[in-house]
Image (cartoon, rainbow, N blue to C red; front, top):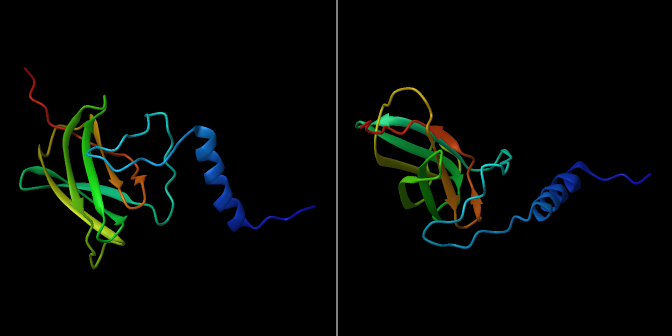
Length: 143
């Protein structure tokens, strides 16, 4: 019986899953292509992450574990994929948040009525990896 180390399995399996799913690296562009809603994002210890809060009456999105000094694309979208806000920022070191950190004040009013009708997601150009989706409430005018 052949024994394979856990490290070897964890290193090999994600590559096989990505190839089997037909996923490839996303080239750097103004707005990187995002995988479909059916794709699964697996959170690992050192993967990027996002969190949100209200500041100055706006939605603020922040996160960590990006490449320090690297460009990060942040998009806030409605659940149907419509981009409501986007920007490019450079990840900076931070004393509390691990890895390269981003803090972005959006132009989206906050707080909103309860209900997550959108999400935020960030793309690290240096690693070619999207953060997991962060559900957010996007204020919209009802006409």
